[in-house]
Length: 317
Picture 1 (tube, rainbow, N blue to C red):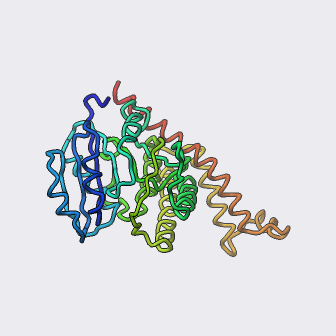
Picture 2: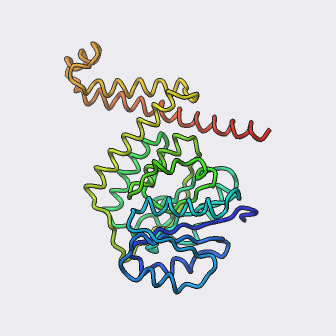
Picture 3: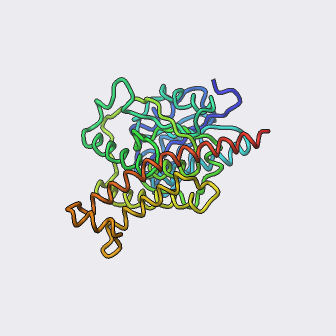
């Protein structure tokens, strides 16, 4: 299936003594390297990893840097480990929530050169999310909607961490600015849209047991929400200042600006003030402007992807 492409698996782990052995030992035989990042575990995770006997396994110790930093460390290890070789890096959680049999589906679009990054989508699976706690379904739905708006393309399960990423993406990544905490999937999706990489979604099974999430919900939503708004505007305005500017980008930026102006006292245009005088609330004007901006933003995202593909084609000729 994989040809001359190496397959590496990155497993972030923190206090996963109940699951980590099974996660590592259940990985498919075609996996060439397994990188477990033990991120400050205080249970028996480290000793269990020391008992696993396989040359494929590489264990990296961190002191609680966060799940995003742990995954970045694993990706960077594979970059150094394989150098210029072609490879795909698959992220698998250390808590046993991901079915290793779904990995082929994640790899297939990249191997077929149809995608650069493939996300697992629990909502697409035949079993759906029937085993997922209701509060997680609600949170995932809300965050997926917000990520769709900020990434400029449809993202139906933004928080699923089961992903496959081509080495091309990793070699173009700015590791100094990468997000280190729990919002890393959202950050990665926005940045890949910015860089013009293609994202696909495949069905993966949703597995839930007795594991406990370490996310503090309210601080998480505030922190990640601010990050997404910031990175979304950086993405859009970076296109304005580059050779990737298109009519879609220009119109989207104008519409976003109109939306913000509608909310700032004393900054509204005559047209906006007239709408307010007719009983139309500024927030409605802003939301309408941003909705129009999002339509243009999707067009801009597709155009940037096409520009990247065309540039790659020219390099090969």
